[in-house]
Length: 188
Image (cartoon, rainbow, N blue to C red):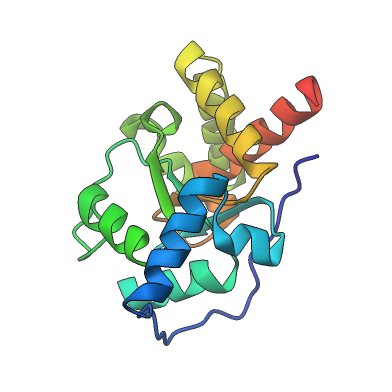
């Protein structure tokens, strides 16, 4: 059964993200390829779904936070995975995540359309309307495929949904998480 894992309030701001070179890395990588499951997942047994916004993070502290939470796969739910913030555009982020043993997937069909974004920063009625409009976007076949895939991954490993906004409830990824939970209950 999928479980939602809330992020802790305390956030790590410093990081030592270097991995050991040489044989230890070779064994780690080889074991992961043979087993199909990351060493981190096997060691910690952590599964489930969490959400994270990179607002307020630099790349090193962001990677440290993901590692501290036992995340082994990050699913980017931004419509356009670009950022003015160094290290958070698709290619650079995927490379940085790979360097610490975290997988990366970009789920474009789960991105929030530009015309719906302002509502997530508005008052209660605007937020409710934006969440409803976005929930309707998730009925598209491509979105349903992604929701199902993420639900499956989260039963096997710790998965984080990524967008910019720091506050989960003010971000469309919260609606994505609700839809994934519904997917699990529907087919679970």
